[in-house]
Image 1 (cartoon, one colour):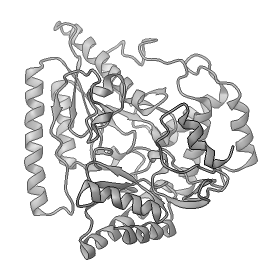
Image 2 (image 1 turned 90 degrees about the vertical axis):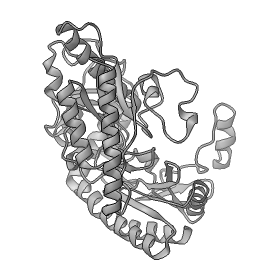
Image 3 (image 1 turned 135 degrees about the vertical axis):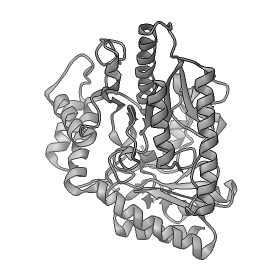
Image 4 (image 1 turned 60 degrees about the vertical axis):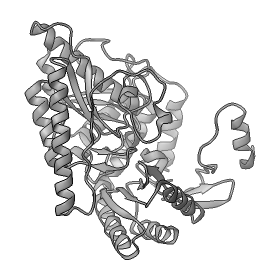
Length: 432
């Protein structure tokens, strides 16, 4: 099939309204993604919606041995929840050693970040209800505190949590009426005025949480938050606020869940964002760059003897993840460790943020530049301007993602280079 026929062919069967390129893997290298239709390369600042940790055709991924191994195991697909393999065990062990690194005591794997969140919630529901039954207060524990501008997924329980700027992602679908809290995000640069503003917003949010706890006695199973709200606009929270959430979770016996589907796996300059925020959650959900999705829990769940990590079939799925994905993430983790790519994300990200702040100051065309590691964003004056700049950047040879009402977000690979950063900054300057 010719590349020019791809979209028309797909449109016969699906809503084919994605990015107007046809990806050519063989001709994509490093952070350059090649379009088979236009025969042009684009600087990849979106990395398949932040899901690809390593740039294209990395030499350690391109070995004959690795390709043959993946191809061999792609022929069949085992149901990993019940049938184990040596390769599966090796990959999970690598994930535990290089990604989890002693932070958590229990792991659950599934496919898709939404289901990673969904099962983290189920861990919390089970934990809270069993606690309440043991304490003689009945089968309560069915509600989740969450935040405005959050994105946690598009199915099941997560639909009751997601409420970002684009209403098409959640409107008209049935939802639970769970407590939704105002979202006290920082504005940048941080100064006396912005600190005063965010402190006031935090006080309001904490009051709302305390009211939700009072109005729903024994019924709050969890509070869930993205350490940085991604689709909601790359909105950052102060460590002090997150520490208050930790204390509330301890004092009121609910689980603190960090949704690290997008912030996790090195993007922010640490393997998990919580590692640099001075707060350890009870649970995290993961996905995207991790290739496999799921949740990880501390031993706090073991306060309940028959929690979901000990009682068979409380949480499960047919596949339990995908063996080929496990083998790929094992290789990714080895490369990330060998090449120091988490540190690279921190250093290159710091440089890009500094340069973007200089652009903001010198041109006045962008504002609110913020970032941790390579999770970077900036604001334009309006939604229309943001959309125009996004298209101009595409025309100038870079693919970038929008977020929130008027922001653009950078989501490069972890092995983004200084040369890649220089090209990105040049295209941004030329496009604003």
